[in-house]
Length: 296
Image (cartoon, rainbow, N blue to C red; front, side, top):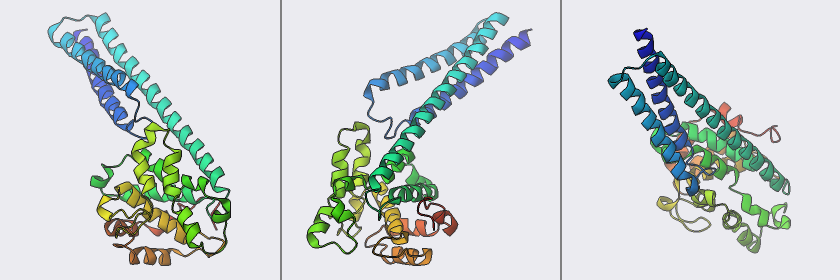
């Protein structure tokens, strides 16, 4: 009987340690566009962590310094299982909310892009390329970027084109200087549209500067070392998408030519180190990023 009692308590301790570890991972996963900036909930998140640690200490104290009976061991073991189930339900709920939010955002972007036959599917393409690119980044670069935030920034990088006249968006030929001046405002317009969304604040520079160049000759003349890493990543994917998509004024370029062009502008327009990583992504995986409505 004594063996059963202490086995149940030991299992309860192990489950509680696992609960705390998973909860810490969960807290870390909340540092994204859907969770950031919610200062009112920070206290309760931390308080919950303190309670979990307090309960774990209680388990250890009872197991080491007390003389628990079978009922006490059952309550402790059952309590750890209950906490585990509640955490699993919480994780599932948050994951579902994030998935649904991303789906709604993708639908909204699709509706915006339907105004322009040259852009329809472009943002989804850039989103897919960006998340594939993220998978191939070295761990030291991944540590600086939240993947959920990066995915939203990639998907919404051209949302500012909602403020660009359709006559410019749908123009079959080259834009004149005045039209280009308006077009170059779309990153700033995108940030302006997002001003009311406080949780998106930290990805606004990624969207604002996705057309900057390493040589400082981009839309807002930001030099390479000042361009956010995420913006440099999106810029490469945006460029690859622009080259490989068919437009009303040009044919789609094949993979080999797209890679050649990207490597030619590495160090001037695009980040050379990131281009080197991007160029090593298998062709088949890049081609799988093409949305269904753009597939040949």
